[in-house]
Length: 268
Image (cartoon, rainbow, N blue to C red; front, side, top):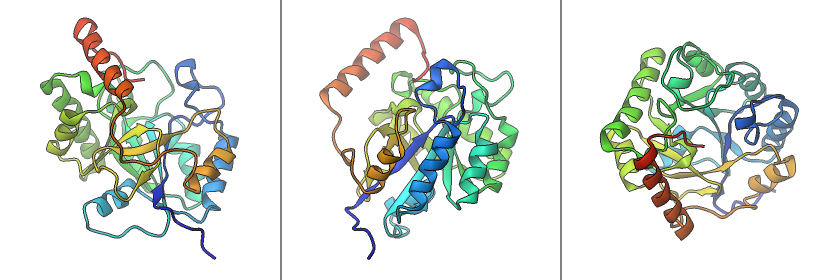
């Protein structure tokens, strides 16, 4: 008997997978052994792993989703990604989507992220060889919803072009740094040629989610296999779409004011 599908779609957000991460990303880092156990739980859940491209195709009305889909995503482009992390996915036949911050993976690139071991832009094709889909995560990892229009457009288009140049094909999918977005950011993403964009929200997605604000569950170092099993069962978080809360709106207003006074800060 197949598990019941309540219409909720877990879209997991990972960052680094390593034992000794820099302090600034440690909260969002999973140790390799725990990561393997989580992947095994996903593989055993009865979910069908798909890429963001497949999910976006459903939102666009081009394709039906498989039974009980799950999506794995990775942000930024840490050094483990084109090596042991991609290998762990490949041996379990788990597709995923990697969103790369081009300024962080380019020598001398402009980036707001603090120092950390990162992959190189030239390794992006290797990710595809492992079966990962590659998407953009801006150039410098700013808070997009605080940027003026010209800077916003540059962050979206320059990162897209850098990845397309090295991959030799279109890059259709975007992740907002730290999930920060608003109506203007979503419209800019569409105008830049992206077919989808993912946020964070720490919520389950659904077949009715917003194509340019797909909800993701952010995996922290304190999450366990039991948490992953709950998400695979469609439990443990609310389901999108839903309206932004008043605290979320207030935080956005505060950050815009702070950016106007102090300039860009990294989204994190």
